[in-house]
Image (cartoon, rainbow, N blue to C red):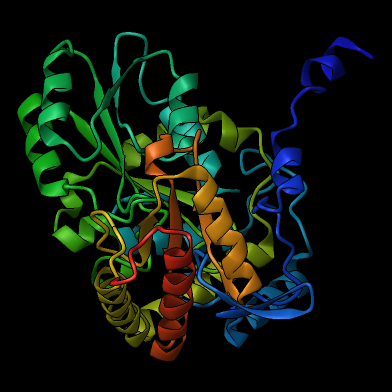
Length: 398
């Protein structure tokens, strides 16, 4: 056995979970992504999706993707920097710039690549990147590629952020990077307080709207729009794989910053561009998002309904105020057991356990789509509560 294989031959945590019947990953879906999916030939209610507007199966989006394939083919065979820029990419970037209220936008092949390529190259050796301790993994990875000093502050804790800002050299560039809606906890960044600190300490702000686009703001325009602070946020990042029913990501900012990124962001320059079908799908999804505001209205109505239902049953939902509802279990094994019991009972949810979170913060991530009904939410709350009582997660009075 070579050293590489030998180094990993003892890694058997997944196998142990499989043997215990609680392995919850790589579950194979045999149908389209909707409120009900098919797994192993069985119908299962989906409460683990990031398709917040429920658009992944929309006929107009599928038609747009087909038309793009007919016109452009299936791929671009190169990077945006060289031969992979199509007119449809430029059209999409113009739409994103208008949506976010910024001078310009730049599209990447995935949302992960956006954070990787932007966070890693905007600041230098004498500069600072300040991260919320619960920022998405892509932001963390981007910061690891940066030569700047990385400072983490307590989750959504503005006093902690100010303490870190005080440690920075006043003459250096300081970039604060935070999620708009935090992907596991479901709470919203305290943007007004953050903006006040950025102005006080001459820092810049980048907001990751991966889970906020299509959810927060006027017509789903995101976190900055939600707070009426578009001018105060320097960079707005987002993905196309969640509310916008496709694949890819974007960064929107002023023309000078975008010009620098176009010529220095390595995950853009050295990656193939978005497929034509992906770009066309996003444009169609944006049209629907803007023209059908009732989708976002219903998403928030069903979110408030579900949050109230879970709290009434005795669940700890933390500080969630979004369609991402964490059900804190605070025990790895029980979180995995609950996930498997629910799947067997026709409910799909996602477990989040250590080391992704501290062991005492393990949770079930329950997420909603605009296409969910109250009846579906009622069924899910009833089944989740029943299983949680049996496992001693909530008491019988819950």
